[in-house]
Image 1: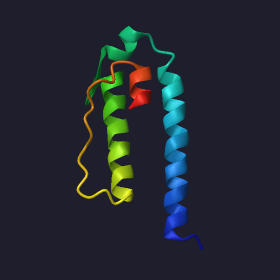
Image 2: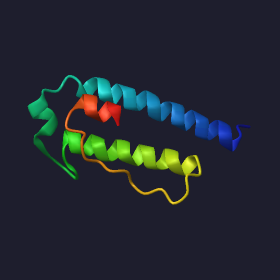
Image 3: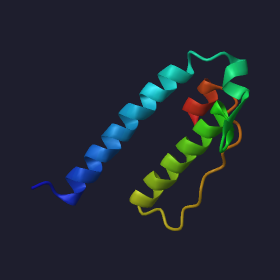
Length: 86
């Protein structure tokens, strides 16, 4: 039987694998496609990815017991490169 740590570790590894695939796909978009309104909850593809990755950082902080972590700032992710740097 897997321990809780093993399960969480597997989920984190999967999340990083999926994140890298998403970034690879986003790199294929033009700057206009990345920023264009897309009818998504957070507007454009770029804004949606910025929100998603900010939530990933929030959960990582919580798992690291960083106290009362809040959703990180999502501004400044106006390109895939900027998003990856975040």
